[in-house]
Structure formats: C-alpha cells, structure tokens
Length: 382
Picture 1 (cartoon, rainbow, N blue to C red):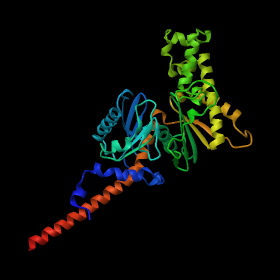
Picture 2 (cartoon, rainbow, N blue to C red; picture 1 turned 120 degrees about the vertical axis):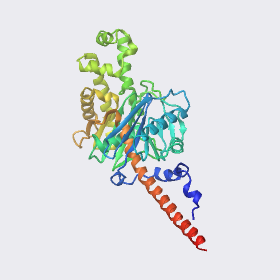
Picture 3 (cartoon, rainbow, N blue to C red; picture 1 turned 45 degrees about the vertical axis):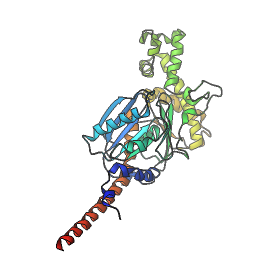
Picture 4 (cartoon, one colour; picture 1 turned 180 degrees about the vertical axis):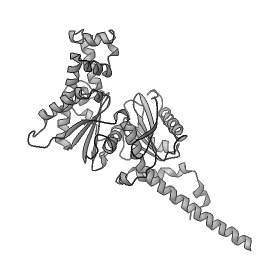
C-alpha cells in the first residue's frame, strides 16, 4: 500500500514514468482525447512561438520571442520555453505542453538527436522540461507537428495518406497515414530535403552534394537571385534597385514581392524552384503513393507562382503518368502557426493518460485519508 509520503509527493517527481509510457503510444484516437487547452511550442532557428490552443485548433493566446543564440547552452533555450509556458499558465488552465522542434527527434520523442540551428546534440528535452513544469510534455519534429495540424484542421482534412513538405531555409517533411505520423524506426523519417537529385551538384550543409533542398528552398531561391545581382546581370536590375545595391538584403520575401509585381527575373526564379519542387514530389509519389501533398513553410507564401510550376513538373515526371491517379498538391492553410497548433494538439493525447493517472493518485489519496480518519476515530473511541 502507498504511504502518505508517496501520495503527497510533488507531481513533477512522479511524472516521468507516466510520460515514458505515453510517449511510445500514439494509437489512441484524437477523437477521444480530452477537450482541454494545451500549449504548443514551435522552436526554429530564429524564433520561439508559444500558444494556448483549444481542442478545435483555435489559438486562444500566442507569444513570440527570439531564439537564444545557438552558441549558448541548451539550458538557455529550455529556460525560454519554461518562461513562455509559465507566462501562459498564469492566464489559462494548461493541461499539457507540446514541443515542435526543428531537428531530429528520437523514436521515443524524448531526445533531440540533432538540431542544425541550436546546440542540441542528443538532448533529453522532454525529461528535462517535465522536471521543471507542472504538466506533461511531448516532443516531436516541427514538420511532423505541422503535418498533424494540417490533417486535423487544415488543407489535409479527410485525407488518409498525406505528405507534408515544408519549404523554408531548407526542406522538411512528414508522412501521415491512417491517422498516425510515420516517424520511422529511429524517429527521423521525412528528411526529404536531403534526397540527392543532382549527383555532384551544389554542396549542402549536411555534407553531401546535390540535395533536393539545394534546388527547391528559400536558400536556393536567394542564392540564385544574389548570384545574378552580384554578376550585375541586366535581368537583375529590378531587384538591385529594390535593395538599393545591397545584395545581402535580397531575401525570399523581397523576391516574392517583386514576382507578384511582375518582375520577370523573380517570376522565373520561383518557376525554377517550383519545377524542382515538382520533380521531388514525383519521386516521393513513386515511393509513398499518397493522396495529397501539402506544401507549407515560408516559401509557400508565393502561392501559385510556386505551386503551379510544381504541379506541371509533377505531371511531367510522375512515374506511370496517364495510367495512375494523381495526388492532389495544395498549399497549407495554417501558415507559420501550423507547427505550434499541431504540437499542442498532439500533446492532448498525452494529457489524457496523465489526467487518468493523476485521477487514480487522487483516488488513492482519498482512500488513504478515509482509512486514516477511521483509525483516528477508533483510537479516540478507546
């Protein structure tokens, strides 16, 4: 029988075993998860976004801060997360926290194996945050969280086989099938950006050459524009004028803005990125055969300037074209908040198990109190 000390120990000290049990299980349906508010955290290379999200995917409140410099210790980032959660908890009844991290997360969703923009290397993020917060914590890759959000509340609703592609600085991705995110044996599935599409091509920070993200990403878009501007190409005069000759000021949003205004070079650059996007999607369709590709990330803000060329290239390169159904290619609906919303919604699955465990502990405590009261009464009667 549990002692009084066991029953009244701080919740944080008993949370980890519960979370380790829950962390390996995601087969429980989201339809039966508790309809309670949870916090989603989206951690990127430049910002940390936190928000309280209800069971319908509505954001009740959001906070945003800059990501601490990557040269600082992992604890600095953990401190930032804790501060945001405690701030939101002052105004909301938070039942769980979901973390969407830009990095490789192990299959148990505890450790960040590697994060390119942060100093996380085999970092036990879930356990460390669980020890500091009064609610359970779930950790997942940010693209997995975004895919879950789009499937639950956005462009992927109703799809049984969905692939999410996030175009930002690089390319991230996620696979969702039958209501479950497919993470692979070691938890790092969906790193589509490092498929090699051009042997011996552009050098990638991952160490290889010719990776997909070197031809279809925000970095690729900016690299091409800056090279043309640095060469003083006549086709680049529009963008050179826009940035007043400061080539380092050429960014993805600037290129997209000029393309919408009709700048021929910027339109062509987005078409090139879109065509490479379509080539990669055709390869993924051959391997995974999903019913829908959802394109998210900052570069997707170009919309049809990017998506239309991608659809055309997809049809031209699809294996068995003309003799097989074609997957739908659509832009994500939830924008930059998808990772935050998805992380919060995934955390609700953890909240259910945690609430049940907490309820059982309370029931045991109440039984013990009744037993102790009966013993005290019996002694007084003597």
